[in-house]
Length: 154
Image (tube, rainbow, N blue to C red; front, side, top):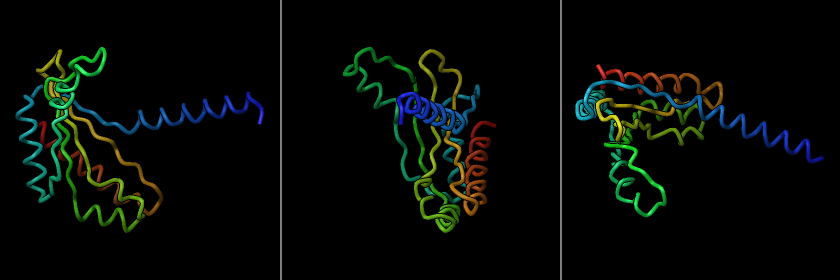
């Protein structure tokens, strides 16, 4: 293969990957306080009898370690990532395709920025079906996550 083809293939792979990643994140912003949004999100998850497997205190870790990284800045005033699972949807996902195990646990990140702590951001990675059999449970998972965010920001 000549070098021009290699360059074109490399460019295509990089462009396709970047485009795919850019389209998988879904974010929303609210003027509600971080504490209210966080409490509402945890309540919404628990009200649906979902299991919260972990709450990562991302801003604590990043702020604690920023001095060891050159030019690191404090980006987040507060930031957490909440991992949770729906046994029902997870079973549907893995029954459709065993590779869907990587989709669980689901995650929602919420944060305020250091330069604007009055707005609370929520972000999650929108799942994409691996195959036709995975379409229905993937749609269910995405609708569940979106409904939790809507309940957290009302």
